[in-house]
Every structure is written in structure tokens, then in C-alpha cells.
Length: 471
Ligand code: SF4
Image (cartoon, rainbow, N blue to C red; front, side, top):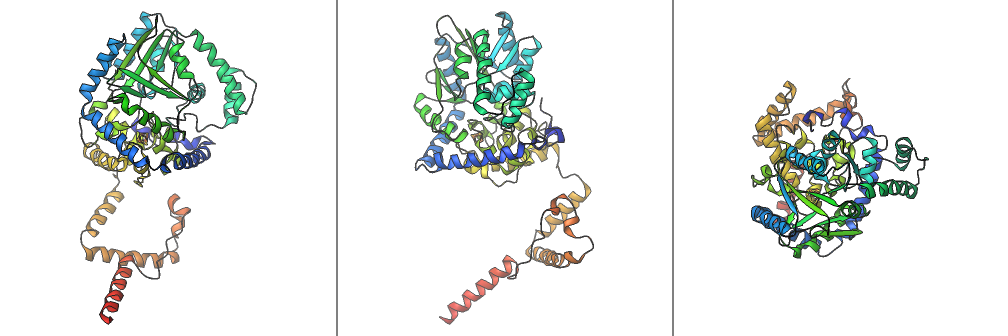
């Protein structure tokens, strides 16, 4: 369960993992380079982004009718469709399905919705083993911790740490070699695919027109999780629709380019109903999404295709890691989605965890104005939960700042005092670099010789006027 107070608490900081920040920085740089190569170098990339944005906007504007169409087409193909208003209802469906069919083991393909629902815990409560089969998720599940990124869950762990984990939890001989680690996981997982009673997956794109759905992956585990057991339960956030198959190639091109820097994923699965002798159930999950849908200014958050690129491009995420955000969706996506899914009152300080540099808005493939969403969420958070700047000194500082900014004269006076302060600060017994954590590693800015920007601008204007008068 999300706990707003946990945000950036010591135990939730990504920094507590020794390799966390280095791995994050390395991966972020790699991701930025790959994005540059496979996306921004394309002439058509801007058009793709705009089309994807328009398709998602249309989908959300017609979501009720598209969901009905999707449902009736699925049912025509023999798929059972269930609607869950929240996590408790979605989990109760899965539990009932498992109990009715005597399910003992479940193989899970990577699904963010299932993590949002905390489905593994719900299944564990009825003694059903739910095993993550995506390699990163498998590693994280073994470690007993939370994923740090939605696309690359074990981003914070080095190969050596994974080798140690496999040795400790699986009794395997230690190895830090990537290929050997992958082979161990493959061997272990194959046994589970064969024995599993039920497969659980998410849905990347539901196609309303045809009642089909698509899943993308690189490892083959989704194919095995959904085809080896005779029962396949697919969980879908209700916004994961596109109107027709015509747009699927666009999204299949965009998601891997942004998510993993690939032009296409190794596997694309298109599901068109259950195979003979098998059962397929789709659970459409709301869990707070209609709260965002009902507010036009926040609706865009439901455009998200879970590519995760906003995270690795976020300077805050790069430093604090995924756990700092206290729930399943970290980084910029988490900051704009979590308050809607769990309620703004519960989300605590989450929308404030940004410098508003807007690197996320610039890179988002479906053009979500993340930075603007954050500003609006902050206003809403202050309206509902009060300002986070609660200390007397904070309140006094902001009051003073707001008074000083109200007229040009007050602003200039303030700047005069700031300049004076900067001149005398180096001679004070309390040097700024001793004031605290923030100032310890930073030099006091130097006053430019040309003066302030305003002074430079006035001087430039005067010189220009004089030049034109002489002419
Ligand atoms: S908000 Fe945009 S960039 Fe971030 S995960 Fe969603 S689609 Fe990707």
C-alpha cells in the first residue's frame, strides 16, 4: 500500500543500494543515447508523436463506447470480461477464478497493473504461488524488494549482486557472468511454465474495433506464460485501448524505441481469443483512472503507454531511484499518476518531487505535458492538504518574497540588498559553505562585472539608441 509519508524516507531512497546511483546514471545515459539514435534522428518522429497524442486523446474522449465495443468483441470470441472498480475487486476476481479452478501455481508476465493491485500478495494469502517470469521482475521478486523502474525492474542491481542473490536464494553456484545468470533463470523458469495452472499478463494495447489485444516483450516469457497454462487471465488498465488496428503499428514502433531503444521488440503477441481447450479472461481495471478521466485538465495522464523514458531522463529520478517514490510508479509518471490512483490526499509530497525542468514533457512519446500537470497537481495538493511549506521560517520567507515581487521598485530594492549580501558574505564568520548540505558543495555565485541582467539590458538599449541617433 502507498504511504505518502514514505516518499523520500530513508528506507525508500534508491541511494541505499550501493550500486543504485551508478547503475541509474549509466543506464540513463545509455537510454538517452539510444533514444537519440532510434527516435529523434527520425524525420517522422514529431509526426508520430502528434498522431499518437491525437489517437490517445480521441480514445479517452470516446472511452465509454470504445470499452463497450472492445468488451462485446471479446465476448463474441469466447473471452470472459470482468470489470473491476478497484484493486480489491480485481483481486477478488482473480482469487475466485483461482479457487474455482483449483489453481496452485501462477506464472506472471510483467504487468504494472498487477503490481498496482498487489496481486502477488493477494494470491499468497490463499496459498497460491505467483512467480514473476520477466527476468528483471524474477530477480526483484527473489530479492524481496520493489522494482526500481517500470521497464527495467532490476536496474539498481549489478551482475555480481544478482549472482550472489541466485547463490543465496536458489543455491546456484556464484557467477557474475550475464549469460550464465540468464541461463540459470531460464532453466528455473522453464520448469514453472510447464507446471503452472494459470498465466497472468497485462495488456499493452487493446484494440476496440476487433476485440484483440497486443503484448510486446523481448524474453519469450510472455509467450510461455500465456500459452503453456490452459487458463490465461489478462489485466488491463481501462485506458490501454486504441480505437482500431490501423494505429497498432505506430504504437508498436514507438513503445520499444522509447522503452528500450529498440526499433521493435523481439516478440509481438496478438491475442484473438482463447485457443481450443483453453480459457481466457480479461479484467478491465479502473482503480482511480476514472478520477483522472473526469477532470479534463488531468486526463492526459491516461495517454501513458508505460515506456518509462521519462524516468531515466528525470534528474530527480536519476539521483533518488525508483523506491524513493514509495509506490509502483516512480519518476515523472508516478508523480502525475499516483495522485489520481490513490487520491491527492494520500499522495502527500509526490507532485513536489520535481525541479520542473520539463525534460520529461520534452521526451514523452505521447506528448503528456508532465511539467504542467505537476504544477496543477501542486495547486490541487495545496488546496486539499495545505501548503507543504509549513514552518514559520518558510512562511515568513515566502510572504516576504511575494511582497518584494509585487512592484518593480521593491524587486530592485531586494536585488540591491542581495548584491550587498553577496559582497559581504565571504567576510562573515559564518561562510556560506558552512551553512548546510546544500551550500557545502557549491560556490557562492559571483556578481557579474556587467551588473544584473536588467542593468546590462538598460545599458545595451541606451547604446543602441545612441548608435541609431548618430546614424
Ligand atoms: S508519461 Fe510519457 S514518457 Fe513517461 S512512461 Fe508514460 S508515455 Fe512514457
